Image (cartoon, rainbow, N blue to C red; front, side, top):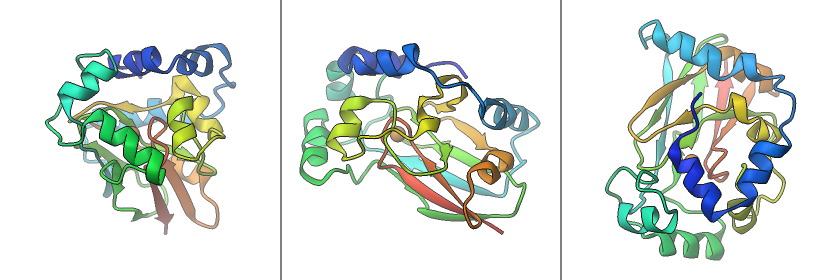
Amino acid sequence: MRRPRAVVGLATLFPAVILIGCSDLPSPTDASLLAPSASAALSKGGSDHAGAIVAHDACDPATFNAALNDPTACMKEGHTAFQDFIGELVATQTARAWRFNPLQATTHAGENLLAQNVGGETHTFTPVHQFGGGFIADLNGISGNPVPAPECLNFPALDFVASGEKSLISGAALAAVAVNGVAKVECCIHPWMRAEVRIK
Ligand SMILES: [Cu+2]
């Protein structure tokens, strides 16, 4: 998938992104399970799914775009200023308005899940074996997730979903990470954004 400008902006603010994102990519073993199959399924008409995970945030465009030095970092009118977002993270290790809904979803084996971003920032909906940090070291640090989930470092496979856009999480990708029938999905930018998907 294309890399959105938001990530470039984040890389400017958090130079560690460049190191993690470009110099030490794991082998793309899961690539065939993630973005390509999802985009293929979406192009078939977008109805090849039963449930959905929706990403929410509350970014304030003026302060986020200034702080991230990117006029497209936040594309929807939210009410959380960048400094308040960072302050909440430092105080509580989470930013509550940045969340997936539902926190627990259910699918049938093989079904795709719709990934919908109704927030202003870009998010990923990445199936992971274990919850961990994302690919932005500073956000990992202040949210208490110092160790990235390996899937979040597999940049070519990440499914960046921009503000207002949709994608699909493939049933195969969910099955590949499921433990006892439950697959974990997290945002690799904001690693406290997490959901669990029960596969029936
Ligand atoms: Cu996110």
